[in-house]
Image 1 (cartoon, rainbow, N blue to C red):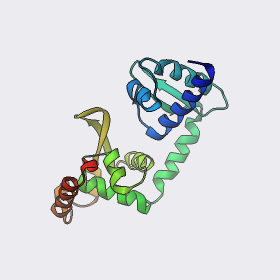
Image 2 (cartoon, one colour):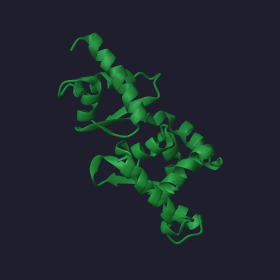
Image 3 (tube, rainbow, N blue to C red):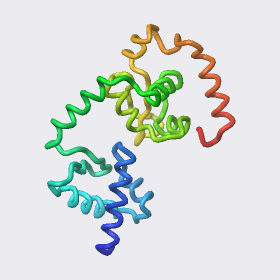
Length: 187
């Protein structure tokens, strides 16, 4: 791989990791970027080298199988204050929409949530998770993915003993089932 190709792939990988927001397997990186098996390592090394620049706020966290972008520890004070302010603010209509979908249709994957909403939802899911309203856990059917569900704190805050007691819960679950049966890409 030439230096020019390596730089191009490193930029593409940075964008991919930024949008993905979660650990990404090397195989998925290679497939997304059109790399040959084993080439992800060289691209990751180049991206890590670029991110070492003190003027950059991100770093690459990785192990043998996956990698993820993260903020550098030097910015933790800034991020802690930002998160504190963010959590203190009221939920936006978009966050309430996502929260409703997770509460009624969860556990749900981020991909399915984004399909239903029609927009990227990683920032909203992160905010809802930080607030303790939503929790994520590994998807047993897809080890590289996560599912999201309402937390017990949210259920308690809503004044019900369990999600099934939410108003019109069965109606919305039924609508989802009909939707999934008639929309192959929602599966």
